[in-house]
Length: 399
Image (cartoon, rainbow, N blue to C red; front, side):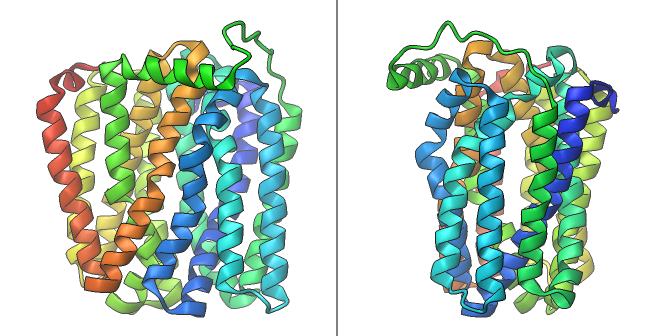
């Protein structure tokens, strides 16, 4: 289950990333609550999510080219420092009680710009840390780190907001980036020569897109991620409204709800790590996608706290299983020289489509209620995954 942690480079990186991710989730919960406290607007919650992700849509492909051209470790050191500075800026503005929705939106945009260059390097560096033999296990353990933080971070945020305030949460996030920065300085990666790169960045970008376009399987996998990002993950940004208006459980209940999704995701990631390089990955991918859709529909219709928690556990379990499988299949089936660019398209669809999903969900929630917005997303996902099962039958045979 933890075989890739036997490799020092990955172990150091993984531990640093885990600490940083816990801080990031603490900030995300506190920031969502701050926006809702300042505005009482579901639509503006969607706007902040939109602004945080739209730079990824615009710049992520160039981030992929950069990841294929330069040392990925150095790119990540620079992006983590930038994230840390932005967290401290948000913390200071909040502590001085001069924070405004406009300032939160500005920080969200800048975080999105940094993420556009961070994500392709972060996704594609894993194979350089562990090699292809341990790749599936390492990606599953990355999901373990991410989803452990989804449990720990929101749970801590619910306590910390009440004790040290939202500015304290933002300061903790800023400090947490030191862990991954120190880890990145301590790992040693043999630099490979990128003989394939052109002097023209746009030519490199074009070559990557042509490679993706010519591969039917890669297109199918990326389209699945795109639909989840557009219609399936907006429940995260709308969770404060759901917790407050539908379930009436407040900030502590919000932390439990978000941690429930993290718990399910952690279970899914541990199962994948234990399975290793198993057969029938395609069948598990399609099954997980349908479980995700049905669970989202159940969550949207729920009016009780316990049922909502159960639905979120299933949402977390099925979503991390599906996304980790897509991530692994893309990295295994792509040539090394295109990995950064392919993973940039993966992140473009995964994170870059989220702003539109957040805007759609925020608008629907404002007009027809948060439950309808989530129901619409669940039904759309279910219809799409049924269609892709028919259009791309070869996905079932992926092993």
